[in-house]
Length: 108
Image 1 (cartoon, rainbow, N blue to C red):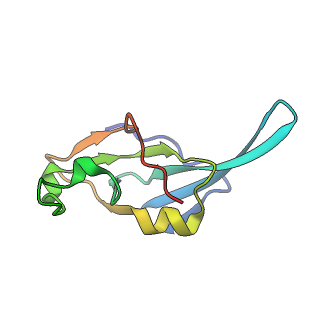
Image 2: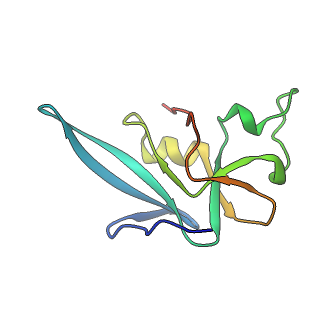
């Protein structure tokens, strides 16, 4: 699996999980959001992602969850909310790893 290069200035917020504060301008408004990067050999999953739970609301086994190695967060996300919702783990054979979920959950 190819990993994205972790940009200089990123900070490690969990073992194997790095956050880069990205600032951008839309019109005359400047906004910031975090981009998440996994270190080589790691991936992460979201506790708020309904795909990671079974019909009874139990967290699925590790080999049935959806993982990513990169994600662009919402402008509403803070490091605190990201750390509360994202779990970094060692990537294992059999994990369904996507680069970015189709509908990443928004945490507040």
